[in-house]
Picture (spheres, rainbow, N blue to C red):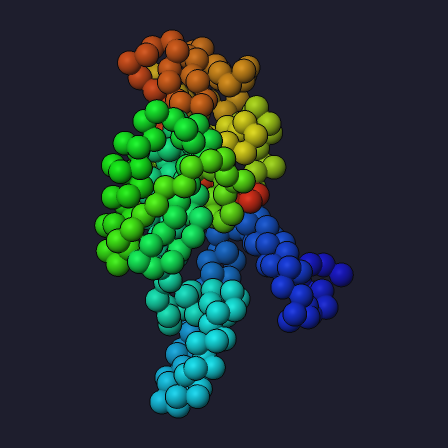
Length: 289
């Protein structure tokens, strides 16, 4: 029996359901372009049908005050909320909008070894805390006012009080556990580039995403992503020897730091970087154009 012929999953076993979805996604990744496009079109049509059905259901129930109250209670469930948000049936919560605002400044903080954590949302007040190198840093006050505070105020004008809590934090609760500094000014969708364990520790992994040839490098949960082309003559470099984060182009020996893309042979050139983030075991990229 293959993965597609397994017995149906019980609806209340959410973790198993999510595992099955991820397992199927891995299978789909190995398909050729034609069946992949057919699968994506089929999935899109099913999602559109489900979205329309849910919209009609919500519209029919809104006129009944008791039903409207029950819907509000149901939407507090994280699974129900996620589905309604996916179909744009309900608006994002303030907490979600604040987190999105913080995502915009996290690459800048990560480039200095720090992060920011959302502690509490109690409109019109929120509480945040710096972590990592930013916790206790002498420049943290400037970072807070010029970065975090401004980002939240721009995204959520209804938040009028932003409190910075001091002290060590226990780590991020949600979302990406690493976002590259190159993500800050790069627009576009995040695209799946495989799994973290596809990339050997301290080594590289070459792949193609949307026709773009990429080279991923990993140290722990930190991943960097570059166009797989030497800045010298554009030849691919994935077969080059890697030692302590430095790769040597197998064609003419140009050496690059895979953490930054800097060329150690000719400092005036560098590898072209792409934004990358790690969520759990997923590695996602945003392609620079």
